[in-house]
Amino acid sequence: MPSPPQTLCGTVISAGLMQKAVKVRTTRQVYNAFLQKFHTRQKTHHVSDPNSSLRTGDVVRIAPAKWSSPSNSIKHVVTEIVAPWGEPMEERPPIPSLGELAKERRAKNKARMARKLARQKERWAAKETAHRSKRGIQMLLEGRK
Image (cartoon, rainbow, N blue to C red; front, side, top):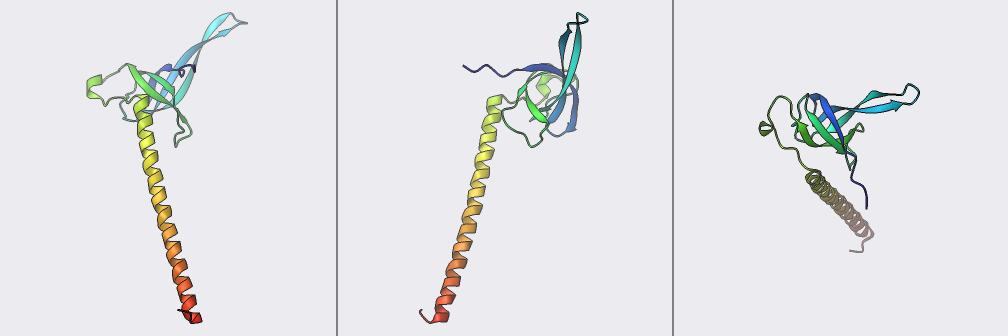
C-alpha cells in the first residue's frame, strides 16, 4: 500500500502578488553532530492557491501537487488553513480538496482534447475537399467526365 503524500506545515509570507499562487515558508530542525545542537532551517515553496483564499500570515498545510503546473516553480498545493490570520474563514472562498482539483483538471483536459479533435476533423475535411476538387479538375481537363 502506498504511503500518503508528505504534508508540510508553513506560514504564508507573500499572498496577492501572483495569480492563484502564494509563497509559503516551512521550517525544520537539523541536528549538527559536531556541535551537538539543533539548527533551524527554512525553505520557501511556491504553492498553488486556486481560489485565492490565503492571506499573508496564515498557517497552512501543503501537499505535493500530482500534476505539472504551467509554472515550473509551483510544486505544492494548499490542503487546509491551520490558523487563519486577519480576515475570518467565513469571509474567504473555500479551499478545494485534492479530489475536487483533480476532477476539475480532468474536465478541463477532456474539453481541451475535444477541441483538438474538432480542429483535426476540420483540417481533414478541408484536405479531403481540396483533394476531391483537384481530382475533379484533372478529370475535366482530360475529358473523362
